[in-house]
Each structure stands twice: as C-alpha cells, then as structure tokens.
Length: 444
Figure 1 (spheres, rainbow, N blue to C red):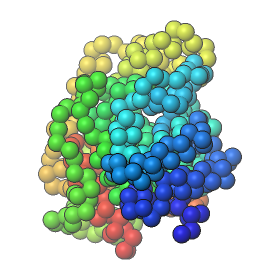
Figure 2 (figure 1 turned 180 degrees about the horizontal axis):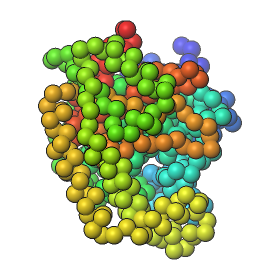
Figure 3 (figure 1 turned 180 degrees about the vertical axis):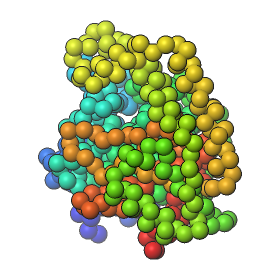
C-alpha cells in the first residue's frame, strides 16, 4: 500500500480501512503529519500541533483495534479543532493575546463526542481574533496572497490543503460557509441548537453554531451523525432521536428535488462572475430550479443580525473588554462599543423577527426542497480581510441548516462556492438534496 497517498483519502474511506485492518491509524496520522510539514510553512493553518501527542492517540486507537475493543465510526481518523473549542490536552487561546496559554481542564462537548467516536484530535486550527473579523495568520491554500475566510480560517485551510480529512469550525454569521467557499471544500452548518456548544467560546447564544469541513458529503454526514445530541449545559439543545444523516444521504430522493434560486435583497454585492456563474447553474438545472424573489423588506435582516450579534458579543466578552480592550483590534473594539449601546427594545424586536422569518419561509419550503444562493459575493479577496459574510447572514439569523458545495471556479482560478439552505430541522434532507445537486452539476 502506498502510504504516501493516505493523506488524500476521505474520512469515510479511511475509517472503513482502519476498521478492516487494511491500514492503521498511525499510518494515516503519519501521512497527514508529513503533509502538514510540507505545507504548513505557507498555509499557517495550525495554532497548536503536537506530533508526538497525535501519534500517541493513533497508537492507542490501533491498540484498541488489535485487542478487540469497541471501535467507533471515526476510529483512528484525525480531526482538526478550531481554537475556540476547548480541549483538555491542548491549549485553547481563542485567537487573542488575552487568552494566551489558556489550557482548559475539560473537553468541549463536541470534542468529547469525537473522542467517543474514536477520532484522533490532531491539533488546534487557527481562528481569527475571538472568532470575529480580524484576520489571523492563515492563508488560502489555492493562492497564498488570498484569505481563507474567517473566522474558521485554519479549519477550512487544513482540509483544503490535505492536512486532515475533517475539521470542526463554528459560525455566528458566515464563519463556516464563507471559508468553505473560499477554500473549495464542503462545509456544513447545522440547524441552530442541533449540536451542543458547551465548552466553546460564546459570542451569541442566539446565533452560534458548530459545523464541519470535509472532503465529501458522505464525510459530512459521517461526522455530523456523531455530534447531534442533547446537552444540559446548552439550553438550546433538546432531547431528540438520532438524526440518520448517513442513511438519508444514501437514499435517492423520492422525487427530483426542486430548488428556489434566491438572490436575496443584497444581490448587488455579488460580483459579475458570481452573477454569471449562478445564471449558468440555474440554466443547467432547468425546470428543477426556479428564481424566487424575496420581499425587499427582508433587507432589514442584516441589521437585525448585527443588533443581536453585537449586543450579545458585548455581554459575553465583558471580561475581555474590562481587562484588555486596549489589546483588542480596532474593528473588534468598534463592534463591542456598538453592542454596548444597543437598546433593549431594539434587541428584543430583532430576536422576535427570527420566528417571523422562519414562518415566512414555510411557504417557500412547501414548494421547494432547498434554497440555492451564493456562499459569498465572489472568490476569496486578498489576505487583508476575511471577506464579506453577507450571503450567509439571513440563513444564520434564521438558524437554518446550510452547506457549501465546491462546484465552481472563478476566472482567477480560486473556488467559487454554491450555498444550499434547508428548512430548520431538515438537515439530513438538505445533505441528500446537496448530493443530488452535486451529481447534476458534475454531469452537465
């Protein structure tokens, strides 16, 4: 077996091969570490990486397998963890000097779930400053002069560069879908409240979500199935049956899906390349895709999200504000200053809009399986910014599941993402529709 190619394997194929004894976790982790050594000097995806610790975990997984102990669905598969998600064995510094050297004494719930499924926690990936807009050191693997997006910069770049098959990220506005689009990988943000957030830097209880970057939709389904659950420490989760991501993904849709092509009221922010690409994609889909115009009044959603996000950030980051505001970036200080000035009535009005918006979309989802829309205004801009999250804002506010599909390329050679959005709670169905769309697009 050519071990030098293992770093290219999907998580699904790797997990099956480890379970079958065809490869070992140590071989897979060694291959990923070799890839990291070759590419990290240019990409800068990792904030904390201990090769010895990663290999120790892999060897322990292999020992479990040899001795016949139970093996989980991710047994021996390496996963990158965004550096705002607590790990008991690695620092979690949240992208800020204010938290330098911080080492939690327990895992975040999602990390504990990954370990229970047999995953190897490879290391901590770079986040922007406190998961906001100021860029970190990570660069886009497709062109080092360009941004990987944010705030889940390192996770998206690590998967795109072939360093790991899977990585966790988070999204409050556009921090999963945008970097997935810029880096040309699959990215999935679940329904708000589906995946527990305990042990993760809190910006906005109303908006924060945990998501996954991967090389395929099957990989997304594999890891997402391990992360859904009720956690009494996260009041937005609730007891529920296990979501059958993998079995649903494997099914053929009972009817050929219909997609609502939604430009949103901010279509003027999309660049010409994006407009042309989506017109072409809609043409390829033909009768299965229909343009749906949203009411112009929905343009207020972008202000509503900002009101909620910045006021909740100001509340949750009070300690950082009090002890170190002078060491925060100018853009973050400005966000917190605005958040501290939000009136209670404006905040409550913005939160009340969420249920109204979802009710308004019920009619759309009664006619269509999913919404088709850009992931970002265009391809990745230069590394001085993390890019514009505007095409994620409405769906993040609604708490709807969304995924990025790496289906197109811009004239600059950089990936151009396609975003598919589903009804709240229809996460598995969304991935099944996404699989249909990928097949249709590649067959055209």
